[in-house]
Length: 453
View: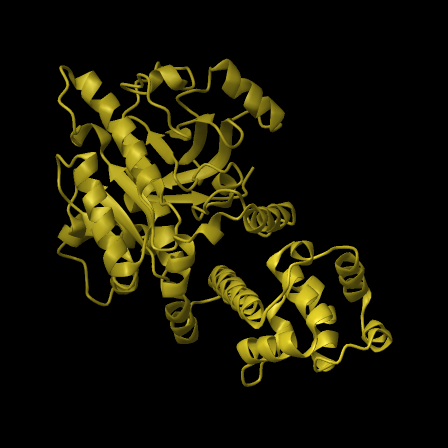
């Protein structure tokens, strides 16, 4: 029997003794004891508490709804502890278990409600105070035996599956680009690789994804961490603000730029906005996975958790273990970075997602495959994508078939000459292939997705 069935069985068979014990343990101002039971048992619990320990079966049955009658029939068909004598101490122990279960279910429901509010609306002070109230109990639940209960895990999994089926959310973490989100490319405890040659826009795409996630989690006890091996904090902030404001950074060295220039004012406004996001940048070359893991632990202790850990540039990081070649070292970095993402646990028990930027060896005129990822070796990422220029691959058989399928027989005319495709090289959680109708605006280092044909 479950703990709730035991409690109801005591109320049903022990009358006044069980009623007084349970009523004392479960009652509170503006809270009736029956609410401490799961929904399917509340009707029966309410009827038994109304009986005040004087159980009159016909009266109880009259007050029951369908769930209550089902629960009652189930109890009448069972026995408790093989007829063992039930004492007041037994009743108190069971009542305490029911109360602890109710607190745990309340905390989990509150946390799920806050997550939903954060996804559908702007975080507020009320949300922040509610989150602070449940943060400590959530951490306790995350480390307790009850958190691994198969029934609870199954229920949450079912809820997530229904939400996905209804289109309320995707399996992966949203990157701010709906066309990419449909492919489930970014997952918790997994690493997505963005690969490409120089000037292909791979760092800009990674920065846009990190910025979109940081903006979305603003107000929550989470942050986004970027390990930048090439650029400083100021350079990354400047590029992200310029991208969002559609501002050409080359104008900053132009004497003709005026302080009241509309584009420049938009750029300054975006810098102010980005400064309020939970975006943390570690601009140090030569970091190892253990160094990065230490930083994730620090931010988790300070803030509560890390939603995304991004690494740019992979080949400039350092392996924890000594290797005898550049190829072996980069392969070790991939493996160690993936292990770091999987092993890091946030305060709420979740894992961050990982993102890394790397090099790509491409054959002219052929769409990239896994073999073109530089130093691919034996590491295993969840997915890998690369920006591609349709002009460069216009003679590739796959591109020709793709254009044929789109009923488009030529590349887009102006002003869409900057069209880029995102080619999914491999993907463990979704489809592979080419995603079209993206555009990379070089002077703004900005990625856009559109509906042009």
